[in-house]
Structure formats: C-alpha cells, structure tokens
Image (cartoon, rainbow, N blue to C red):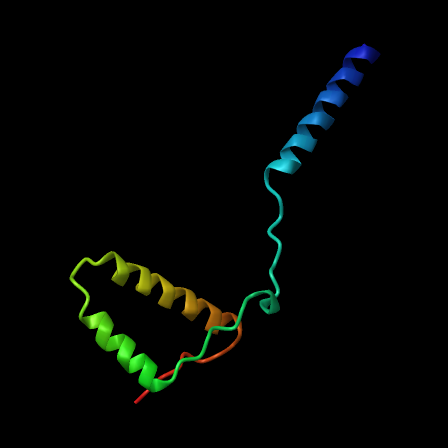
Length: 87
C-alpha cells in the first residue's frame, strides 16, 4: 500500500508540474519598452491622407496603412499621449 500511494503522489506531482507549465502568468510590459510613435507635421499628414485617398479600392497598401494607424493608436495610449489632430 505504501508503494502505491508513493507512486500516486509522484504522478500527481508530475501532473501538477506539467499543468503549471501550460499556462504561464502574463508578464506586464512596462510602457518604456514600447517605442514612442514618430511625430509627423500637419503638412506631412495632409499629403499622406491625399495619397491614401488615391489608392485603388481594396488596395493591400491601404489595409497595411490602416493596420499601421491602429498600432500608432495603441502606442499613443500606452504612453498616455493624445492622438495628434491637424486642422
């Protein structure tokens, strides 16, 4: 009986060790690890917007630029920055 309970305990310990390794706790990333978004002048932004509007519908480049803008929004939020607005 002692041998069986030792084996059961060893199996339980091995199982718990494996289980603990399956779901590591998330590690928070300090905002200083994220780069600050590059700043663009209003003139640069206006030119980029005009060029963006000229892209063909369903352009892959338009999709990539949209993804880039989403990433910049996340960086602004991480650093507590307001999204730049030009008049």
